[in-house]
Length: 371
Figure (cartoon, helix red, strand yellow):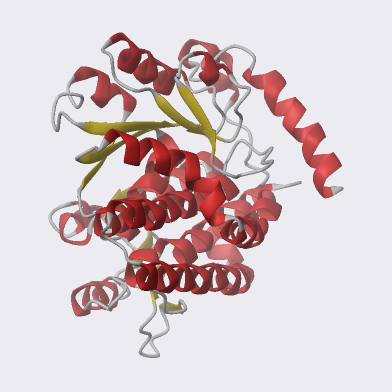
């Protein structure tokens, strides 16, 4: 299984998880309900944090409470104090992230419930959490996770729906409508797989040039921008930055010259402001893209299916995952520079045994998917 295979598998796995949605999140909903919490805090790093940022606004809307997303370092240093009666959920897809494990250790040392979400319940994270929950990824054996990002977004959305029902902020009719909305967003993800693949095929040469990239998005799409910048950086190995719309035009845009990649993810309802920024920048660099559900026929637009606004990250993520997977495969840029590779052990972010776990996942992937 290659990275692109997992990108294209995401809508299938999300569809499967939707069919068992109540069962999938039941244990976390029980924990949430039994504690009568006043707020929710998600502690995560990298792609897991970006997925949480994609789902944060949805969670806050469904649960009608404060929802924050913080890094493990910020949590340990100062983001553990307020609000006081909060459910902390630590997320690590691999279950080997040392900083997330440190956050769980802090929770335990300070008499906080240590709840962990992971795709590998047998990973070292289980020794540091009171409760370890599998959020439904199945098997993903490529380090540059994609399937796990979308599945985590879906899991958090489902937790918002059923947690809201338990809390009384979402009624039965609302549950049914929200599940239908999610089903449409999953379908839109499948549609965007094909749209993105066609886009990359048509723009292979310009996307292959080693130039910096800027990714802009607001709300749930800020999480998309974060994840897009990460994927472009770690796979194609280009400098990539992420910004909210107004933060982008308050200085970062000043570095843009012809040849820069600029991706602007439109607000779900359509933003004249973002559309105007994209129009302006298309006169500076021809590699400007506006990803929008409200296209006006401009050459730099890529059309996205319309979905419920707070679920817009689900189709938008796949566009950037596809770019990263296809261009990296074309350039064979999976490996880091030899100098960086030589010192990588000094910057290790995974617990002991991670490489062995990846090899085990590859074997399991071959068994599960026949690839």
